[in-house]
Length: 327
Image (cartoon, rainbow, N blue to C red; front, side, top):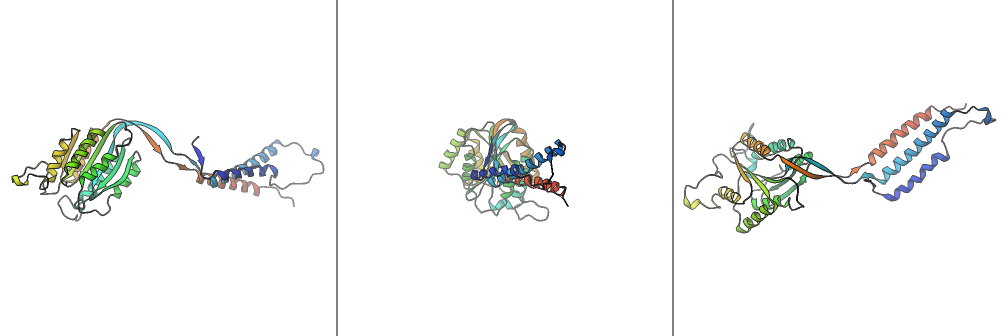
């Protein structure tokens, strides 16, 4: 049984259920000789039911006080989808529009467009397990892998908090890959990186990330939200002196991702519409069979116990008002 109580000692109060058996609570009428009264089975049944109601009220109250609940449970789910970690860039440049300025009028910031479209993406994939992480100067753990879509949407919305100036993509990727350190999950494992820029990655970080991508067999999608007139991931340097990770971090980050020996796809999105098309493409590509065990949180039943006791009390009170009273 998955039923349990928070305070087991309170269950001693169930002994009080014998009280209705000792006293019916109904007014008695003296009769000179009981044999004169005909046997009334309906009255006997009603008397029994009234005692039973009183016993149930006591039981519901005691169980409510004891903290009756259903323990955490698991259920098996089978469908099509993937284990997806959404890794969101929270550098302050994400709060600008695709035109590279503070949004004006109907303009939408890159961060707002990403949150809106990713929330729609999650809504249309009911069997996915989705986790959320963010990064700027340091990584931020937002939501573990879960099939609870309402929680995931709330986690995505929570990333609209004020951003910081810097982008440390290596730390963000390390945290995203850490979602897959648990026992192997059935189905594809995916990291969706949403960023409008990049930063140079040290050789040590490159080695660690390369090893983790291969160890955990993680696929990578990079949604690069390109600001107007900014360098792209496919741009070639006009000056040989600029051909380095410091001057063109996006280009070198793309080259590093391409060398990971893991499935990788990059998308350059220069508008919310282009971002929407990229997300739709991922939605079509990642739709493989998925089999996993979902954890269901503990369910509190004390409120239902109190509600049941209140309803039965009202019923018993109504019967009391119908009681015949001797003048």
